Structures are given as structure tokens and as C-alpha cells.
Picture 1 (tube, rainbow, N blue to C red):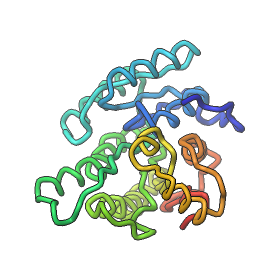
Picture 2 (cartoon, rainbow, N blue to C red):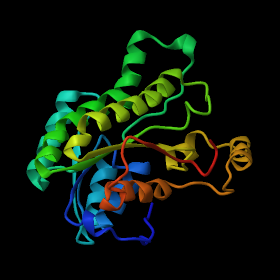
Picture 3 (tube, rainbow, N blue to C red):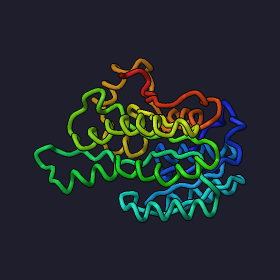
Picture 4 (cartoon, rainbow, N blue to C red):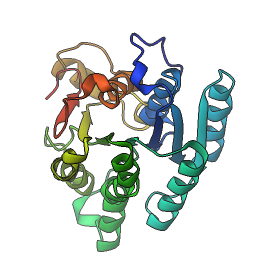
Length: 257
């Protein structure tokens, strides 16, 4: 997915080291692209080897500094090691975009304790430990920005994936706690709750004529939202232009909620 020409360039993001989890496709890919255009030094973590390497090659051809580390974010030791490698390559990390997640549908009756734990691991747990890993960098730098990705699914009472919506609602609590604890160090912590964003995964797996009809009925904006709609807002939140914004959740859903 090609990123459009940015409406705004934020000088404060030039050469800033940014870490994006789940940056190889979907919303994460759009975020990586946006930060690269800003002149940031971008590192991202993903499991998708081929797609991620292709993204690095493409952006590297434009002169952007982008690096990829393959790791399973549910393996906290592997996550920490990948962050360490990116830090050594790019420098201290002062922007963290906790984007990685997986919205697998599931019936409540079929959920086992092991499956529940895995859903929490892939949608919530790693966000805490990624933040824990970069907070020392941000303290030493005199500040930073952490952006945790939630979802509007729990706000609209979406069914069919209770473990996912439970994890996503927990992101708001995590965000507000970290914002309170680390605000004295000028570390800003916010959450973005996307609505139904038309990633390729959503189009392939979930978009139906009935779903599209409901989308157009419920959204105030009568168009499909794309990953770049969210990426542009994430870049703003990371910049110094959002220097007074912390402890908040921002909804990017075209006016559904």
C-alpha cells in the first residue's frame, strides 16, 4: 500500500528513533512509511519476513533509514532481544508505537485457558514489556512518546471475540497508568482506537456486502477508512506538535462510536 504525500512534515521527528511493532503490513506498514517520510530512523518488529524485507528495500531506496527485526512479540525474551538489536543499530528509542495485534474471531464456548492466555499475549502483554524496555531511553533523552493501539470493538459491544475485546479494553488502563507514572519524565503515553480500517486482511477475511452496508450506515463519514488515515494521526501524536497530549485515548473511526 503506497503512502500518500504527507500533508505536514514535523521537524521534531527528523532523526528521531522510532520503534513500531507489527510494522510489516496493514496499519503498521502505513505507520512505518509515514515515519520514514518524516526523516525518522525507523525500526520495526514483525513475523512476516518476506513482506518486511521488501518494505525495507523499498524505503531504503528512497534514502530512508529503516530496519527490520523478526521476532514473535508474544515471546518476551525475543521481543527484548529484537529491541536491543534495533537500539544498537539506530540509537536510543524515543518513540514507541505499540501496534501489533491479532483480531482472530472465537466463540466463547470454545475458548480454553491456553487460548485465552495466547490472545492476551498477542494483544496486550507485549505492549507493557515493549514500553518497559524503552522507558530508560526516554528518561535519558528527557522525554518520549508511547502510542498504544487499542480498538473501538469493545466500545461498540462487538461480539464473537471476547478475549480480543477484553485485551483491547485493557490497553486504555495500561495507557493511563503509564502516562501517570512517567509524565514527570516528559514521557507522553496515549492510545489510538481505530475503527474498521480497510487493511488487506480485513478486506480478505471480514468485509462483506452486508458489513459494508452497515459501515456506511453507522459511520458519519461515508467512505472506507484506510491504514494511512490512522498512520497520519500516529505521526502527529509522536511529534512535538502534540506536546501537551498525554493520558488520552483518541478514536479514529470516521464517527462510528
